[in-house]
Length: 396
Image (cartoon, rainbow, N blue to C red; front, side, top):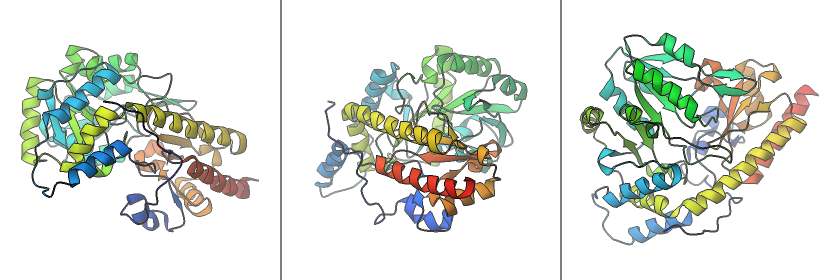
């Protein structure tokens, strides 16, 4: 049962005493430990108390042996997506996975051969590229189109590039890093092309709960039965509920034919049933998390609005199109007139901000930086202060 919870989104627990990536890698990535790290896609916000309480209850039992991923766990997610997105999955379609990236790698092995081409839509999450290349497949880039800061799919370019070696597309929905929530019309047109050319779609929908007012996430597989049969959907509570460290997600394969192929590659990889605490947290998140998510979205929207206002008023050479989904913002810094290495130096050395460099998301990311806004408001305020100080020093 969902329940109201009181969360102080504006208090950041100290993570420096843990092995948090954003601190462990700070000096290696940014050359100094005094940067404010706002790069890796987890939150500096407390994991919900109902998840922590569920874990505490389980740890009271003195044995932490093998445990099966229960049907209750999967049913909690099925019911969640039925309520949130009006899409009903079936238990027999679903597999447990430690990560969306792991699921993508299994899908690549299941549905393509060495030397085949797999489409990605840059700029996009860097592990899309490495998942393809590490499996000895060929990245076929279909860059997004940009019009005054608004990104859309270039479907004419997509169709023109498909050939008889093209097997799959990895779709990021909502899109990381540009923050688009794809419309139903966009997804229908993409689906038509994939059906026409017999392309399998692997949809990374891990950010699908993080959607702002005025937008709606459409699960690709929900659009039609024909499209459902060629879609493999990757989900998980890690982003939504700040529990990525528990390494738990699912992959949904509705097609009987594709599921047989996926299962063969899945079992050859062997993920097992995950961790006890991941299973416990997963079920708690999807049975108790709706009110918490509502309040989280309000907080994140406030951070986005604050940063947008400050950029427009004080740093107009840096532009941001407000994200429609995710807690990540894609900053267009081309107005600063800096090549990428100098842009990185400006952020890392001058502003003391540890952001993700746009070039990591593909060549079209040059001139951009990605910032994570899943933090207390005070962290965003500190980031604005640092950036504004560096901006004034250089440009005024």
